[in-house]
Image (cartoon, rainbow, N blue to C red; front, top):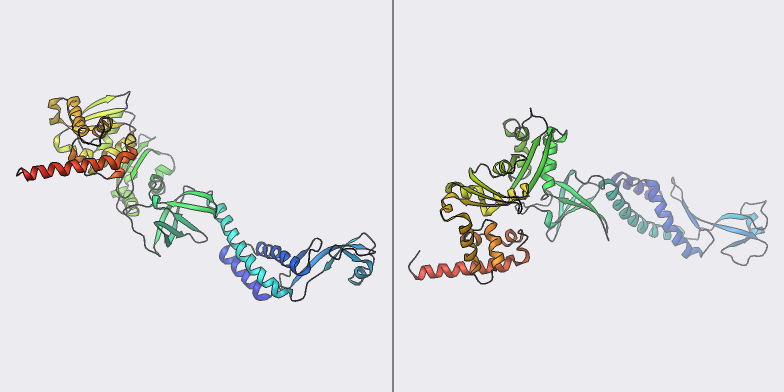
Length: 426
């Protein structure tokens, strides 16, 4: 142990933010164990390190006895006086240096191990103390490595994890790239505290709006609801407490600059800012805009809305693979069925029943599942075969049956196509 060792402690104190005193205490604790092996089980053994020179000494508190029965616990009066205690008497307690020969080399080996352990422990504690109150914040990190599909980011004094489930599926990250993430949680694991980051959570978008739009952060504008399909589209329902403040305009900003900054951070993910309304019809119409809707039928008990629109507005209202409708359902809390007005000639209920029967006749799809699919907006086999398993799994009534249903639908679709081609229909 020498001045070079102390210099290392100073360096670690600056780089890792761990107090030098704490590092010294950790080394001293480890050296006590080393001293016990070298000295023996001496009574109240301790080790001291000179903070200036780095000199290491071992000390033990021994009881003064006329006759020494245990050399690890007792010391004779003569020996105690020789160590600089001239006035001791039997039964007194004295602290004697018991540093073994070549203890410096032994101490150096144990000190290195203790420091590494202490640094790891201190870093974990610092991670927890620093980030436990930062849940909900946005941090900047550098991509360091990948663990399977998870991303490990360097936040400066700590590493954090962005699990695969919190990644945006349309984004690719490169080692060394700096990205902004949302601190979703700080979890205590068997390996210590772990900071969980996210770019896919809807709260990430919400936090970006809070940072960008001062009216949201000061409470003038309230975000009532938010729904998101990461990488593709987000819907945000906003409401102004001040009648003089336009909530949508404030979020969009002058010449759209505020929302442009957020969209740029989201790698061009589409963001719909919707004026919230307590009226269901108005709120749903706002959420499905720019599609123009014509008629509403509201089933309060089932919290379901049946909507008709012009044929040329149907695809716009439903959105790609039903995305617009799904996000509207999430943001409003109502189940939505949309149909082109031209199809009302046979009656809405009749049309639904016809579509249900079409699906129910496919082997592998039950009557109940067929009804769920139709009411979710899948009115034809051509619509169903274009979706992916996760899209169907999102329907609570479908769940784990999604892959079976999709396989059955695609098989039936392939058979019909093969039949059309054999009959000369292209």
